[in-house]
Image (cartoon, rainbow, N blue to C red):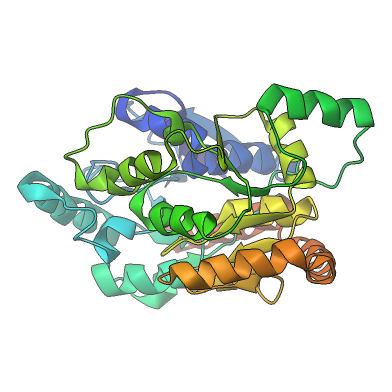
Length: 357
């Protein structure tokens, strides 16, 4: 098959923000996996606005935003679109669209309905797509993601551990948060929960160190509150962006990983943590139960006391941490980029065969 894949999130303008987020990781991992496991296909990579050859069998748009134009309404090429989540539509009060956003959503929705097939990361996201777009279930395929294979258990030399502790000012024991700072990440409640304990929290994420924030934008509410609540508080060690090699080490050194999100389309850091043998504390909201299965400690996303209680339990009970670590490693093995690539090719073939019938 001759397949064109849109790589705009890695290249241009507004989409560059995705490079360090889940969309960028998905795109780069998918590209590498397709080329590795299915080299017999012809892959062309393009950015938004480029004219495509008429000889293509299909195009894949591997990202979607409700309030920004990402889809073409005029292309006659068969198209597969990946929708990671519809967070702004699920929580409109926290992600107000404005008049322009509402108009763009109507256009984007029309474009999505025209797509030959839709891929999404979880059953939870599939239900949202059906609810907000009216697309029939049979035109939507759930294809799970996977952590980068670089995330794994490692044995650190004492000198390496000492270097990391000095580099990042790490305490002897700590819990770990890795992720963005958008409203759905639930950071204000996480911060309040941590303050009810004596647990140091290491926080990794570029947004956590942002200085020029529009505090009037409701989309930044969670980030603004998290920064304000943790300012000059030594219980919180905010590292900003961390290189992958060091992030692997942090997962391996942490007592546990905490992700108390109100909503996720997938929740990739959970698999990163599990691959490293790091126990996971999370919620059952959105896709998180799908991803973590029976291998996590679950808390109520809307209860500060529940989050604090769960953190204390993991912090104080080594047996629970060991059990979660073991179960998490087993759970993470269910997900792989080879499997993601195989199922994606399966969607491509379905679209290709329909084209030729």
